Image 1 (cartoon, rainbow, N blue to C red):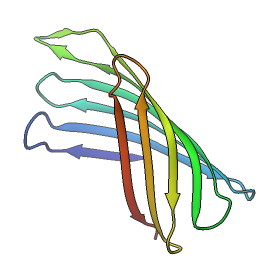
Image 2 (image 1 turned 120 degrees about the horizontal axis):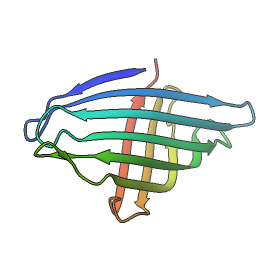
Image 3 (image 1 turned 135 degrees about the horizontal axis):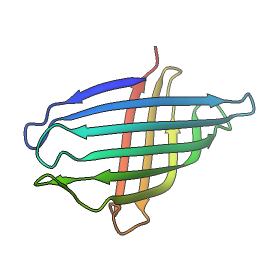
Image 4 (image 1 turned 135 degrees about the vertical axis):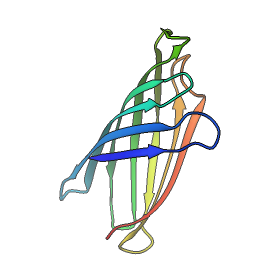
Length: 130
């Protein structure tokens, strides 16, 4: 479980709660899924509910290749009234590179599949596992 607060220098602050899940098999297959809820503290007071899921295969220790998708439903409240809910769907490939045992670099270029979706959303993440 991850709980967060983002203070924005421009725009509304956001409170977030996420449930992060993952697993794998000895055969090299891995999966992950995140369920999240985010609420803006001001401005439009948007509420976003999202699910992100992915599966990947690692033929060796250094590289894994997979697919990832994100579905989000977003409400906005303008002048006290709720606007139409936005439906976002993004999907695409994912790649993970591990140059050393604890360091990982993830790349996930996702493409929007609905009118409410962004055209694309690319995530580049580097991390160190303790």
